[in-house]
Length: 251
Image 1 (cartoon, rainbow, N blue to C red):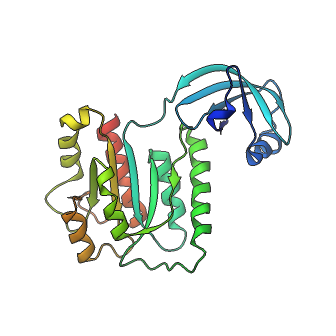
Image 2: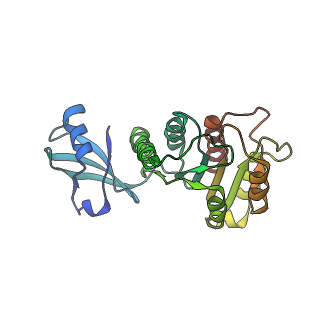
């Protein structure tokens, strides 16, 4: 069943209005929906609905609420991925798969070994990546659309560490502490039991982290961890870390 996202103000006591033009076009021209068909709707904040279409045209649609539930497919842990910006089209794959795996937000980061250069049109790339997130979340039927933020540099990233309860730094030179060790330690803590569950994951670009970046990240609170015995590609590392987090913290 197809899922659509609306703003909370579009949700009434009994009915829901859908006014996103792309969604309306998709409903009419691709899915061939009509009055009487049932759809899933998220209010993008907390609630998801089963609803029956009352009418549908190119300007708006209205659906009658059949059932209302709190989100069932959203992780309790909120993971932000700081992704060193990769070459070519790898970022689209990273966004798509990490959204499917449960990431809460993604922030591209220009690092010392980032090859990509901002030529003044980077905003268009972010818009494209956000669209990939939008499409991925509908496919996997999550309740929230993860946001892809504008890119930042490493010092800005480090200054944001304070809002997280744990900063994981998967590092190819780490051979003592595994991500499992840290996650199980944190899960057993009082802070985690009290609901402090915001995790940041930092992934480097193709060339990895410079020594100076690694030093600054660890000095400012990043927990250096290993993801295993093999060295993963940048487009694989974030997915692997996210999968491990969801396994330890959610299942």
